[in-house]
Image (cartoon, rainbow, N blue to C red):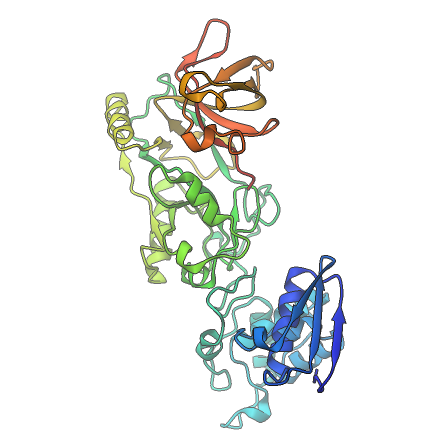
Amino acid sequence: MPFHIGASIIVQNLNNETYNGLRGIVQSELDPTSLRHNVFLIQSKKTIALKPVNLKHAVPTQQDDILFMSIKELKSELQSYNISTDSYKDKESLIEGVRNARNEGWRRPTEVSTGKVPTSNDTKENAENVHNSKATTSTYAASASAAAASTDNNAYSAGYQSKKRSSTSTASDGKEDKKKAKGNLPCEVALAKTWNESTNPTGYYMSEKLDGMRCIWDGKGNLYSRNGNLVMAPLFFLNALPTGTVLDGELFLERGEFQQCMSIARQSKPDENDWRSLTLVVFDAPLVKGDFETRLQAAMDALAMHNVDASIAKVHSHVVCRGKNHVNEELERVTQLDGEGLMLRNPTAEYKGGRTSDLLKVKKFFDAEARVVGHEEGKGRNVGRLGALVCTMIGPGSDGKKFKVGSGFSDFEREYENCPSIGSIITYRYFELTDAGKPRFPVFVRVRPSE
C-alpha cells in the first residue's frame, strides 16, 4: 500500500479497530520528512487529519495489514505456512488464524534455515493448533518474543495478543460447558444471596467481601465483566494470566476505592500505569468439577504454574468458619477496617451459576438499589446544594415505595452538577426496614455503574 509524494487519501466511516489499523499502515508507509502528503481518516463522521509530524512518533502495529486482506489472501498466507484452511469457516476466523501464526513466529518452509518442511501429519496438527491459538514451538517456528517486544504494551483487543492462548479449558476436560452464559462468558456467574442466622455457617469457607469489579477470565486471553462485557485490560495484564483455566474473581484496588477501581477498569483505552494498581483477586475456578476446595486449589495451581505475579493476580484468602460467633467477630473486624462485609461459600457444593444459597454475603448493613426521581434542596450549610435524593424502591416486593436518601454524600457530590441524576439507579445501605416497609437510616453508596 505505497503512498506517493503528494497523495491524498480519504477513508470514511471507520470503526475503531479499522481506524487504528489503517493509521498504523499509513505511519509505516509514509515518509515522515515529506510535507506533501495529505492523509485524512474520517471516523464516525469526524475528520481526523494525520500529518507527518504526528505520525512520526506513532508506534505502528505490525499485523494491522491483516484487516485489509481478502479471504483469498488470508487463505494464501495460511497455506504458505503449510496450514490447511479447511477448518476456517469465515473471514474472522481466517484473520485470527493468520494472527496466531504470525504471533507464534511461524515461518514459510523456504525461510527455514534448516530446510525442514513440515510433514503431512505436522501440517494437520499445526493447522489445528493455530486455529485453536496454541501453535507449538519447533525447529521451523521462531520465538514469539520478538513480535511481543515490538508490540505496544498499551495495545488491547480480544484475542489479539502475542502470548499463545488455548481455546479449550483443561480444567473442564475438554467438555463443552452447558451452563447459560451472557455474551461471551464461558459460564453463568454465581451470584450471592444474603446470609441470615437460619443458615448454620459452620464449615463454610469465609472471606472478606471485596468492593471492586466482578470479572471472569476465560482462559483464552479475555477478561469480562459479570454481564459479559469485554474489559479492555492492557496486554501486560492479560498476558500474565494463566491460559486454559477459567477464573472467577474481582478486580480490586483497595478498601473504599470502588469508584476509582471502576474508573480504571472501564477505560476504553487502558492506561498501563493505572492498571498496575489493580489486582485480579481470584476466588473460584467455575469449570473445574468438584467442591469449593478442589476449585480453589485448581485456581492456586493455575496461577503458580504460570508464575503469575501476585500484584496482577492472586487467590483470595479464606478461612473455615467455626460458627455464628466467628462470623460476627470477623464481620466486626472487617467493617472496622472499612471493608464491605464477608462472603460464605458452601464447602461441598459445585459451582452453580445464577443467584444461589451456596454463596452468601454478610453485611452489617443491607444494600439495595433505588431509582432517583427527584432532588430536595439542602438547608443550613447545604443551601443551594443537594439536601436529599427522592427515590423509589426497586426490586421484588418493593412496590415502588418512595423515600429519601440524605446522607453519605461528599461535598463534591452535593453540588447539583455532580449529584446523581434523575432516572439513575443508586446503591444505598440501610439498617433495617420500618413497619411501613421503607429503609431505616438509608445512606448513599454510589451510582450503579454500567458494566
